[in-house]
Length: 445
Image (tube, rainbow, N blue to C red):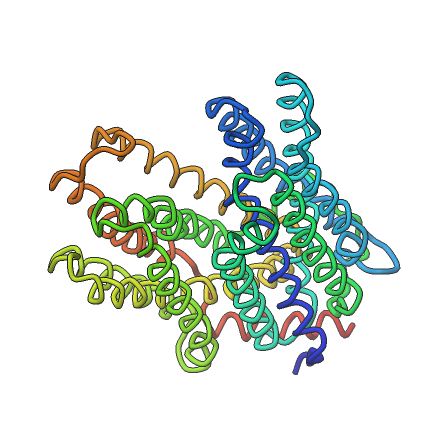
């Protein structure tokens, strides 16, 4: 039986993800508007900054993973980054929302540098924060619970900013005041830094790293020689687009299909409620059914719950909101079970290759998440182009049908497509038990 994790560690891990997602959500929701409407940066230039920084940041993820895997210190492999990096990213966040009144050229340069710096520091915190869940206990049940609490904390962090971000801005002068963004950024950044720091301070790494020095080249085997991991990553690339597509299109949907942007709040509540309930229900299901089967059936039922409002009409708002929430219930389930499967692929790596590579595995997962988000935005852009969308255009039946197709049919297809790679995920419950037994024996030698 593996080591139990204290309540304090569970709370700070969930809190760390809550703070981190508050920070990420605040940046995602407001930085583009701040650049274009308050700093006066042209929309094209602002978009280039964000896209370039995102690509650069995504490429850093695997490198950061390999760096953490080679880290050896008195604090462990991952804790040092959680102890020292959070306050640096807090400073970078405040810098991103600083209007120093410079020339247009200098403003563009500072915005580019500060956002690139923010992305780099976010990766320095993000990879170790998730990877520490794989070494916090040798008990797979405890690790699944830790991951579940982290995902729930992260979702709550997103909700806090989604609902409270605009209220924070209004408290300091409104969405047209640069000072409002600066003061709001300070508050969010301090909360995030403290919660991530506490995770590093209180958490413990109970799975000792290998004493063997692993080269970067050999460490890459964690990915390309780990077939279950490759299958899972391929599936995650697709399943992440369910949320990515819907979050990107939902404002267009409520404005042009339902005729009122205020319905976005109800849509957000439906999303969050469904996802949280799905996350909470999953650990219990995993005690009765195999992870692979839970994932597959979640995808099938998720696809059906997307198709129903598309096939039977989404003009009934309450009906659609219910099924929107149901589909995100199954999305929440796929998030928890896939993260639990990710932890199993790390054990599989240690069993098959002799080293775990937690940092590289989790950094590759975050790379997949970012890449999936980029693909989602590309799909939305292409869809709006296909629909000949123009800002503030009249709502036509053709536009409404097109937006409904993107909102419901595309996610339904993504749910189903995600099943195909997961069929090649080979870690069964029986093999997982054998792996854990073998690892426990080898660690005791």
